[in-house]
Image (cartoon, rainbow, N blue to C red; front, side, top):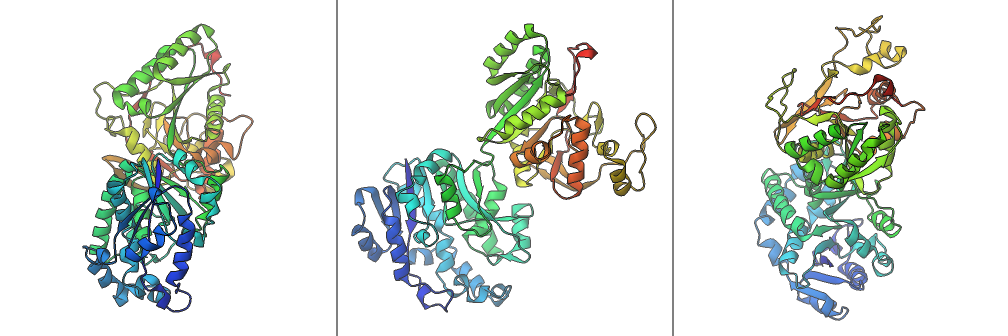
Length: 544
């Protein structure tokens, strides 16, 4: 069951200068639109608002919680907000801010910054025993047609679609500030360069997520205000969206920031969940034992790879006597068995990319070949000195790719056939590109590999949950990897090749990387070991 939570107070906005002023009667008219919604409503407000509501609503579907303006004045944040609001260094940082509602009205920020607290209070006081609660601004019909809620059944669709906490965000490129919050400090708190803002007009989700995120919100609001940093509730929501993608579904709307786009897409079933579900794809050939060894290594190394993914096995085998055993393993471990007749290693890789692109419920996927098992034996570091065993690899790698907005994140620094000390794309790009990008090393060796091939250039090195990772000129290859929906599209779908050899894809995507069209990452660990122990005749090997 889903319940909407809202609140409305007269804070004197009608007294502001033209361009910023709106009368309270204007808000009451918009609020009247919201009261027509035929769903459970929890409403915060004073005695006069209660009278307004009781005259218009079926009170069996309404819970009104008396809360006047004194509640917002008598908390730990009010004085901190007033101190910042009246500081000329704050309101003079950008031209529009001095005359804004944030600066002119003492109650504006205390109220909007309390939306998360009110939503959490609704969870505690809820008489409807709701499963999910969503905050909705009382004046939302100013920009969103009430028909979405009264005629178009969008609330039921939202209830069915989102199982995590939902924020709706819009692209926002900033230089100095975001809603009055220093942009540099916003990026510092978000631990990345931010490029969107999360809206405060509609947000929420299951009760358990509200409680967790309310604690996070309280901590961030306390810390930022103590450091004289203030925007609106949307500044804190934005930081939360970047820091906690494992708790939050983030839906991106147009750059105008108008929420109606989200509800229109919900109405037309055009909303796809971003990163809510994760796929695991394995490509295998003529060896159920290789596949089984990979699965057993995942169960031992980090069981989440098996228990928290939607799993697919691309069975490329020519030996059909293996099919029964593959089917048994798929049944045992929850894989969907996809049988192909040796479409090749890179041909199979391309098929997987196209298959994932059609899965509306999947936002990310991990790719493995069947001989890329995790290291379970006693082995501390790889030959390049990187750790082989880390904790919570599945959850942390997902957090990293989401937080950094990587298109793909490779899981291994070192592989059997090479490592990321060398820039392997150098071997595969066109000669003209090689001459321009590596003028100091424009020519390939006549035969074999060059011991002084260009080194891979890194841009940033960071760490999350004890796992280090890097950005920079990371080349695409068929090593263990996790890709986003957008990254998969860029790498494999946007441009298709008749013969998608690994070298061709590496070259094409590296050139796009240099053009700024691709954002890849690499974990600075080596958790898997490429080990083909069940050999097959060389003549059976096929690329595509």
